[in-house]
Every structure is written in structure tokens, then in C-alpha cells.
Amino acid sequence: MIIMDAVLETEADVGFAAWPVAAEARDGVLVLSGRMSRIEVGAAMAVIFDYGGIPTAPIGDLHHLLDRHLADAGGLVAPGGLRVRDTTAKAEILPGCCCGLEDWRQWRDVLHQGSVWLGHDPGTDLAYTGGVVRLRQELGSGSRPARVSEVEIQLDELPGLLAGVQLRLQGFLRLVHAWAGEIAPRAAGRLVTVLDENFHINGSLELG
Image (tube, rainbow, N blue to C red; front, side, top):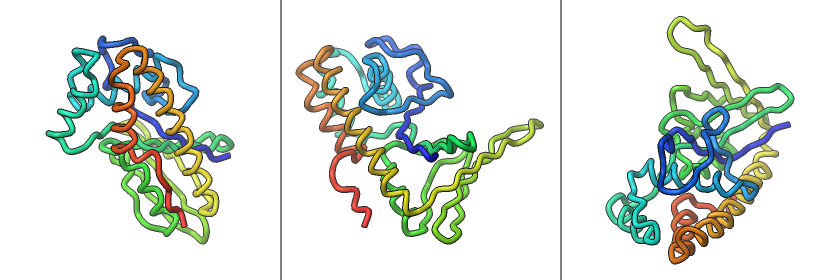
């Protein structure tokens, strides 16, 4: 069974103290969905703020702090992307270094057998055969043997997988609104709008 999730790398939240966050997630990634705990949502927001070097105080002005960052940077980015797992083969493909959650919709290009940036170290190779895309990722460094992970996706299954990712991201947005309503009520609506606009969550996927 193929499972596709939107994930964030969690290393950026080490030592974060502006609000409660979950302990570092297993394998260093945090899956975004509408089933996250409050402290997991806090960890996701910590990654986003910390990665962008965005101030978190005064906490009640998070929306203004975020808007000032956007005025300077022009956009919001976060380390992560889409993780693909084959639960039968027990294989997974993770976003590599410099891959960002903001680019998750680029996976639509795979439907047309195009290329997609999935980061480096490790890099991911894509190969198309008929109606299948094979993802291959090689992990290893120095004298240690490389570990190769391969996952195959039927192209006609990809629209459903991406639609599932979008639904879980929409669930994450709802949790962000509830989370911000507790720690920074004036910021809740604006935080959700900014995340939606910069990570391209709502709106048609245009998979046709």
C-alpha cells in the first residue's frame, strides 16, 4: 500500500521555548494532518518560525511578526515536502535537503512524466515505465554501505494520493486556528491565511 504524507523536518525546533512543542519526532519528520496533538501543532509552527528566523515575541503579535517577515522575504518556506511510503515493501522516500513544503504541488508534474525537485543528500531519481513512476533514493556516507530505497507509484493512483495530502493539510490548518486561538487569539485568522497562501493548501489541485 502506498501512503503519501506532507511532512516537516523537526530538527529546527531543538531548544525552542516560545510555546510548548512535542519532542523530536521519530526519524526527524513530523506528519501534518488534522489528527495532530496540540504540542505537535506547536512543534510544526516552531519549525516554520525558527526556519525563517521569525521572532516569536510578543507572542500576541505573531501575525504582525509574520507579516514583517513576508514583507522582507517575499514568502514563507519550511523544510520538508512529501514523504512516500510503501507499507508492503517497508520502503520510504523522504524529502531531501533543500526540499520545501511550499513546493509540494510540484508533484503534479509527475502525472505528465515530468521531473520534480525532491532535494539532495539524499537525492531521488525518478524513472517512468508505462503507467508507473519508480522513485529511487540512496542513503549512505563515507565507508558505510549505501542503503537503497525504492517505491513505485501507479500514475493513475497519484491524483487520489495528492488529494489525500491536501485534505490532511486542510485538517492541519484547522488545528493551527484552534492552537493559535489559545496562545495568540488575535493572530489566529491571519496565521491560517498566511500558511494557506504560502504553502498552497486550499484551492483546486488542477490534476486534469
